[in-house]
Length: 178
Image (spheres, one colour):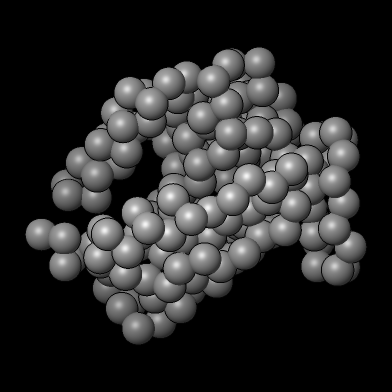
């Protein structure tokens, strides 16, 4: 029943941005996703900050509902809000940007939200940044290159093609239903 699922949308290019408040209208969601443009940057930190703001807001109005945050990215963390300092940076210092984002991912899990990461970059060469972020979110330990333990493997997918993205989203939908 689609009326039971509400989805909000955050984009995170050079800057994060709240794109769509919670909706259960699939057409509205598709239209918004299709209208998003390309931005030469990937600000994991700010995307996670806004995701938590949305999650906290819905939890306030629906305290008994489970919250699922699905973090999909096609790239390494190249931008950051520099931990709320207001300075947006865009460069290839992925390790530093990962470090800025890690506690925001951890905050989601510590708040009781389910956190999933789907890397859609097409290759495995940089997927470890996101798998490490998922690992950190659930354990609070490790760095940008920590191997994902099998205990948390259900929360990360390296989707090398569109079929893998669909499979990952179906697995998350099944987890929501169970």
